Image 1 (tube, one colour):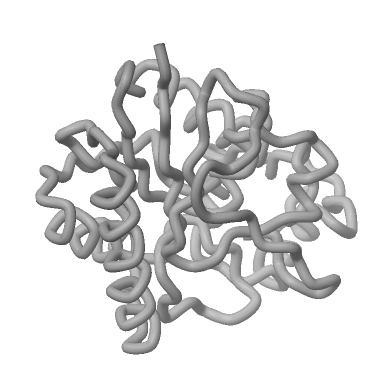
Image 2: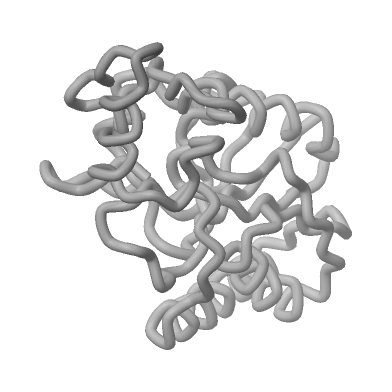
Length: 217
């Protein structure tokens, strides 16, 4: 039995600067939309040429940038779409859509909390001490659990979501080493096809090597 999955990061979108991506509600940029169409065509050609058997439902984070990305792939591959909350990016809870400086200011004036570590945004273990927040590893566990529950045997199941939660999910699934979470990123809209029962080597597509100053999300 083979359980192949394709992880797809959303295309480039209108992201607020210096703000954890989390639940930002903004759409794809024009350039991001063009890239999604290019990647969907290349992936569709590969699926056809390699006789991939696709699961009939493409599963997607409900955030707009992911939904817009998934819509292009679903049309090209003639798949249905199903929005799944479990595929969202890491949540910062009550501090959603605040800038890094604003988040740190909120924590600084709250006598219940210590200042977060300097690298808190990219610390896989750190969880902001507010309602609804989760760590990157917790977000990855959420995504991984959903994939394990829904990946179809002897088919290729597509999941459209977000770079950080996907990479942490790949770690929980045994497809990435922990040190590779920070070392690697994902190309916008380029699927990474993996075998859940394999050694983690991509079957199609590839992880992106991160630049030193690139944000984790």
